[in-house]
Image 1 (cartoon, chains in turn brown, purple):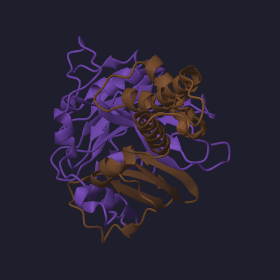
Image 2 (cartoon, helix red, strand yellow):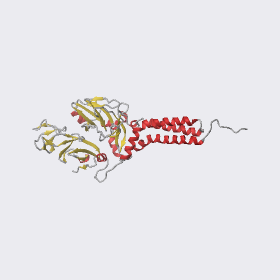
Image 3 (cartoon, rainbow over the protein chains, first blue to last red):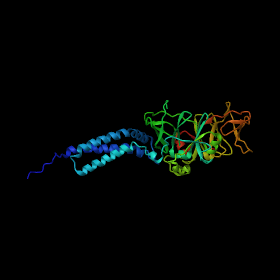
Image 4 (cartoon, each protein chain N blue to C red):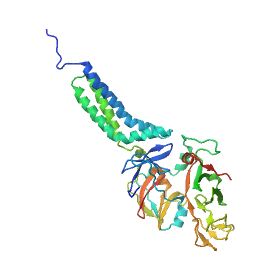
Length: 172
Length: 225
């Protein structure tokens, strides 16, 4: 009997380097999402340095997570035929993680909790269903007066509006 | 910003003061200061707009033709009626002990005369206006007829510093100035007496938690009466 010859030369060493690169890419891709997410989390202290880093990483994340996911895909295709099933499973897991990181870097999950106001609507002072004792934030431009009830502002936090032609951001 | 209109979104939180991101450039901005702190427009500051925090009843009296932001129907049930008492109980992440104030004590923050000062809400009286001096600037803080709304003015008429008192013996809310005994309404305008038609200069009064005011005004002093 002839010894079984593998269909392709199976060289562990030639798989090691792309495998390591793949692992580093996955960790980097995750970092792009998790560094800002962990630093900028509610009820934690943000030091000026950590915040600066987190915002810089967060701003680069939408681009770089996609680049990284693309590179990981190339490596996965390259390695796919020459590795065992459990290693394939690792590659799939890595792909899922970097894709999730790329997706999460593009969404504003703070707005899941506090939805934005797409286009602010208004009622007259007479028709507004508000108790006299409720607090509002108020602006006036010439004769145009607008009130933003704290009750709504405490939920939306930011409302983009135009009053008398002036674009303003009302924040609470 | 520089002739360009930016739309802001809630983007994160920085020591419990929120961060916003503009859709147009992706720059991150600090809510309380309007400063761009990261991204293409870093270093720029939004122009502050003078605003008021007052009760709806008082606002409606002053602005009967005004418009009120309508609740967004899809989210209205998530609005909290007692947001402030709830937030009051939340822990803080930065504290500035030694001031005699608790982190979540509500203060009225004023910047005038090159200085900043925090006026604890609890130290302001509905019965009498608070007179103070910040550097060269005479400051007047008045709590309105609703006992909840606070406004601040430069306490100066035609270049002269003037003291104000609450008019007594009447149910109408009026201030009287010590110089001409004219009557002034809560908008800071004289409506009776020799000064009729004059208005005091408004000062921006930021209602804030002590820790947040102190964080963004490291040199602030605290008003004591």
